[in-house]
Image (cartoon, rainbow, N blue to C red; front, side, top):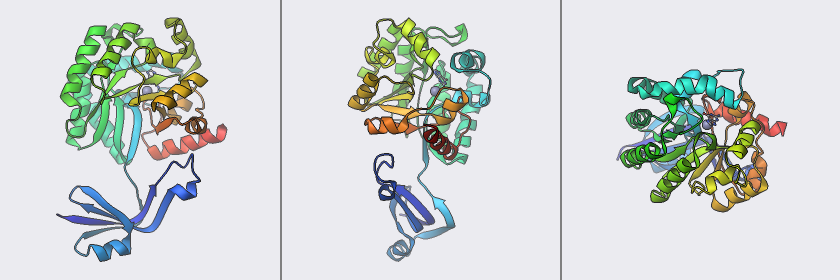
Length: 343
Ligand code: GUN
Ligand code: ZN
C-alpha cells in the first residue's frame, strides 16, 4: 500500500492537561514524522526513526511547521454562518431578531447546500475536520449538511433541530413531525460513511414537554445516536425555563425527566449549573461543550471549565458559530484561555 511520511514538528496528548501536570501529558517533537499508509495514520514517531523504518515512503517535508490532528468543533450552527457577528443583543433577543429569520431560509435546498458548502470549506481552511452542527427544522437542511460533508469525506455529527413552540410560524414543527422527520433522517444518515446523527431538541424553551419526551423515546430506540442541545447559557433563559417547567428541579431536569440525559448527550454552554446538575452530568458521563467566543460575544458568562473538569465532567470545545465569533479552533482555544484568566 502507498505510504507517505510527513515531516515537521508534532504535538500530541496522552491525558487531560486540566487534570494532570501539562508537561507530563503534552508531547512535542521538534523533528517528528507521521506515517500514512493508504488512508490511515499508522505511526507517529521521530523523523529519523521513521525514515530508516520506511525507506520507500514518499516524503512530504513541512520543515518546522506544526503537524497536528484535525480539530473537532463540538457545537456549531452551520445555518448561522451568514449571520456571524450580528451584534448588540443577548440570547433570546438575538435568536428572535437575527437567528430565526435566517434559519427560516433553510427550507430552500439550494440555499442550504450553498451555506453547508461554505461552512465546511471555512472549517477545513481553519484545520477543523470534524464538526457537530445543529441544522434547522427543515429536513432539507440536514440532507444538505450531510451531503456536503460526504463530498468532502468529513466526519460530521448533525441533526434536525426540533422546535414546537416559542419560535416563528416559519420555524416550528410538531411533536409528531419532530419524531417522524428525525427518525427518517437518522435512518438515512446515521452510520452512512463517516456521518453520525444527533437527535437535536434546540433547548427546553422551544420544545413542549411532549416534544422532549418523543425525542427521548427516539433516543431510547436508537441509543447509538448522539443527542445535542443547549443548557444554562444565560440567566434570563434559566428563569424562563423555570416558568415553563415549574415542576422541574433545575434546567437539566427538563431533559432528564424526558429521557434526554445520557452518556452520548452533548450540552452546549452549561455555564450556570447547580451542584445537582454537575453531579448528574458526571455520573452519567454526559459532556458539556464549552463555547468561549460565543459566551463572550452574546454576553453569556464565564464557564468554570476547570471546576467542571475536576468534578469529572467530560468536556468538548466549540466555536458555536454564529453566536461564536470565529471559525478558528486556535482562536477558540485562546478565548478559553482568556476566560480561564478572568475566572
Ligand atoms: N440557545 C438556543 N438556540 C441557540 C443558538 O442558536 N445559539 C446559542 N448560542 N444558544 C442557543
Ligand atoms: Zn448553540
